[in-house]
Amino acid sequence: MINELLTMNGYGLYVWSSFLFTFLSFLSLYLVVKTQYVKEKNKFIAKFGNLNSERAASARNQSINKEILSNSSNI
Image 1 (cartoon, rainbow, N blue to C red):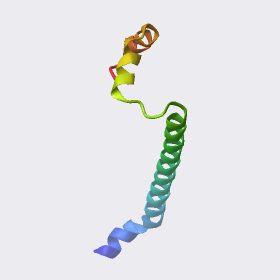
Image 2 (cartoon, helix red, strand yellow):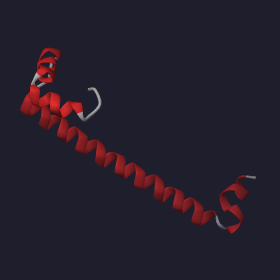
Image 3 (cartoon, rainbow, N blue to C red):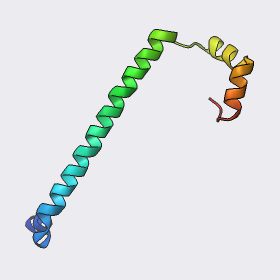
């Protein structure tokens, strides 16, 4: 039973190698995106610091930010 699952009538090598390649590709893509996210987050914190709720509320009330936010969803 297990042997049949692994061999898949002679196509097992192709199927399992394709599965492994896809899994490793997705894993590497996830790791790249995660590291880029952490870098950008650290850049933002270094430049602006943590944005507290009072500063966020005052930023929403500025006219230029209202124009920007009117075309996007609520934050």
